Amino acid sequence: MASIRKEILVDATPDQVWVAVRDVGMVHVRLILGHVVATRLEGDYRILTFPNGGTRPRTHCRY
Image (cartoon, rainbow, N blue to C red; front, side, top):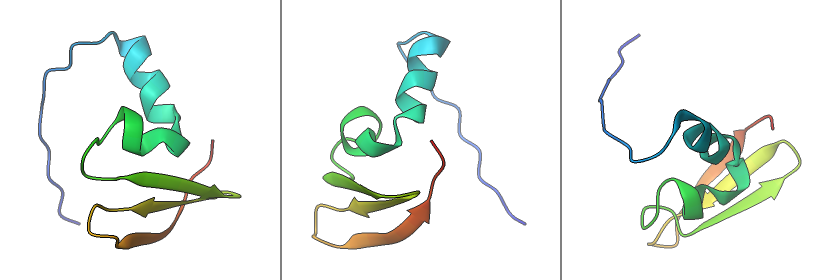
């Protein structure tokens, strides 16, 4: 299986980063502003809405 790895510098503590990563319902606010405009949770699934109105099919997430 192929993979891509990219290293970036983040102006936050590791604890702050993990809090944001665990907040699966706020992806559009905390992690990828401008790339996702809304996040909707339905049980254990997350639906992302993109700026063009398209949506990402339900993604399973445990939180």
